[in-house]
Length: 303
Image 1 (tube, one colour):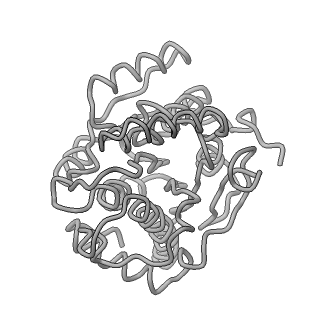
Image 2 (cartoon, rainbow, N blue to C red):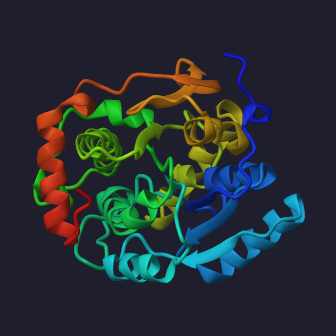
């Protein structure tokens, strides 16, 4: 596929919210969206980093994004952010933010940090922003997963609190499986309700971002962080290239409902193309159960 960012259409007037856009994939996604005319809001938990990112994006594009304070690991913060965000509509929501392979931590609400941040926070945010999305003529939700979702075959409600023990990479894989189960179930429910909402997914392949080293650093494992950082520099593609699948999913005019986009070269790097989620990710009964558990956990439901 010869797709490049030059193929992104004119986005003038389209309101886009990108979570986790202070660095890495989210920053590069926001950068291209601004370059193509979108009205971009970057949502992140650290106001200082958000201000620095906004300044950098403005310097690079001549257009400054709005800033929304959002901590996906705190459901009260998610609610407050959704209440604070007050455009007349939201055309595109890009659920990009995430944590990876962290030591065991809990969210403010007592959930395991990775599933709590990567899935439950975005589930709640999407549900709370649904009225604004449905005010748009062709709304779209892009949920960013990972090829690591293929390393696990199931997720259970007990995984929300790691009740049966904790392994950081297993927990990460389950959070990314949850992202795809949510994306596909959101698509099914949106179409069943007769709405124009388009739910699609993307993953960056292996891209150079801070995620590879932040988990080991949180756990005080400096050697692991150095090894991960060295390997990433040699093998991974740039964060800008890693953002291509998200941009493709967010802007391609004829992308189909429930599509999943990843890099073309063995899903590790390269131009974006349509790829297949795992069999577990395509299990509609598991997706329904996850949706029910997530609505109970967050206290909010989309459909």
